[in-house]
Image (tube, rainbow, N blue to C red; front, side):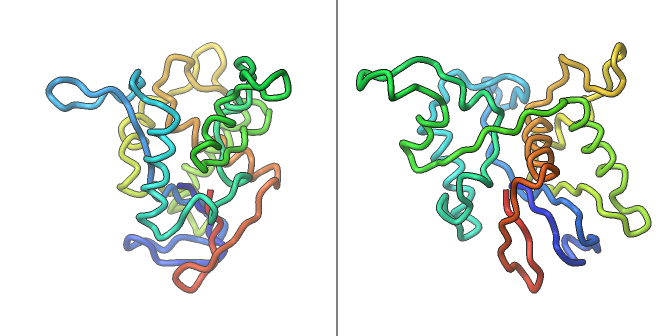
Length: 203
């Protein structure tokens, strides 16, 4: 869950400037080793769309929300979720996509807008750098975003293209944040709800 703050607020002992972004919480599923340790950059091969939708629904419920409260245009994923994988038995007018499969469980998704990956990373880096500096809007990450904390330090610049990220970096969580920032920077989203005396946008 990523939010943009529409007014100055106190959160976690920090004063966060208006216009800042906050990564509030996450639903992250990955492979688990026999000793219980998580393989952050390795997917769980047993994961289904139903199970993932249930996990996201549980996260929203924890914050008193549902899929209907957030809405399709504020639920951003990799644009690959809209790629056609085939057709159903109903005929050629019923393409199979991950987005359509998620929708069966009430989880409406919008694919991220097409844009330069490098531009998105640079925007995200600027926001991270700006956090806690002279009242400028920045990108803040809560302690609940465990996978982001575990993997973001390893998302380094590509030696051949410093403007972009190293292609082998563990970027799943960082990508999710980049998709939201890219969609919002293109002004595709503007949904606001009141929280704690200010107004925030939920993604």
